[in-house]
Length: 116
Image (tube, rainbow, N blue to C red; front, top):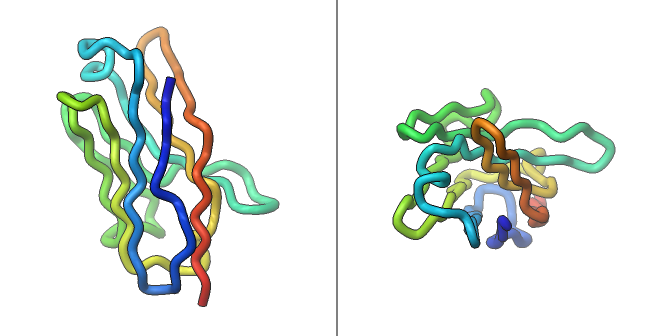
């Protein structure tokens, strides 16, 4: 199971760090997985924000490049999303996702609200 945390309310320009713990997942499965953060704003479709491959390569949605950073801690089976210079447009429910050859797990979302 995935447990996401770290959401909250901040003013524009602020920072938040989201965390996602892969409870119950064996280490080898975790390290072989592609991890990602998605978000869904009210009235919009869920979209990919950032992803990190098992080898550590990361990709970002254009709108968050330079502001967000995805990372992982294999030993703790944790995935993080550091969000800086937050904008009102970043307001959404954020979801972590861990995917591999035959697995695809989603965590419950965590709400991020950015006020102007």
